[in-house]
Amino acid sequence: MPFDVQQPQAYQHLTTRPISGGVGAEIEGVDLAQAEPQVMAEVHQALLQHGVIFFRDQDLRPEELIAAAKFFGPLNIHPIYLPLDGYPEIMPVVKEPTATMNIGNSWHSDVSFMEKPSLGSLLYALDVPPYGGDTIFASQRLAYEGLSNEMKSMLGDMRAVHSDRILSSAESKAKRNAGRSTKLDEKPTPEVQTTHPVIRTIPETGQKHLYVNEAFTIRFEGMTEPESKPLLDYLYEHGHKPEFTCRFQWRKGSVAFWDNRAVQHYAINDYQGFRREMWRVTVEGERPE
Image (cartoon, rainbow, N blue to C red; front, side, top):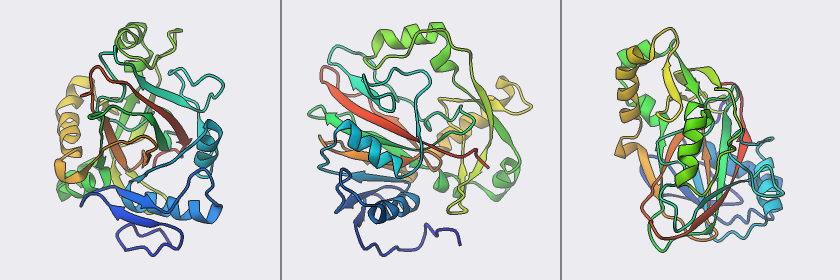
């Protein structure tokens, strides 16, 4: 039986506290550095139910963050961003006080351009600004459910092309690296394009989700980019309506774990002159269906 995300769940090892009416919950009673398999099984259930979950007051060494993420599957090493020294599984997400731009400042689902995009990402806060630097998450299940029946029917058989061109071209790499502290590997890399269904079903739940994003989706299969743009722009805008979202305020030791199949996220760049440092690990997923 698929996991029913819309039914209340009784957890033995943790407590959930929703932070909005649409998506997201804080998890209490879990130390990710010492979590047992039965605890992490409930964390997985909470992730499926809420789309994104948050933990406070965690104290994690790199090895502990990696071990926690591995409960959910093999880890993905980002193909373009430079990793943390000594830990290829960890991508440092850093903005120094002198940097003008952050990473993640557009609505997206991580690495959707890959043949098997990420199942989920864990982001751990080591250093946060005194204010600002929040992350917004948007439920793509609610985005799908908010479409008209005719739109659902039209999109049901459509596929879209996802591309890493904003990260892989030499011009884009140089431009992004100039204003950001987290660096792209500037070695030449060919553009990756992959086709995925516009409406994605999550295997564990059977729930349908809208699966296009403005960072990586470039066109519909069989259509040109100009032909695709009007409908894609509508879906992008629809996909992050306020009622589909939650906003998370970071503190040192916070961890966010989001399902890249079920939500999109946006990192707000509103903390100029302050430092922010995170570690991100990404769990590999399945080919979308």
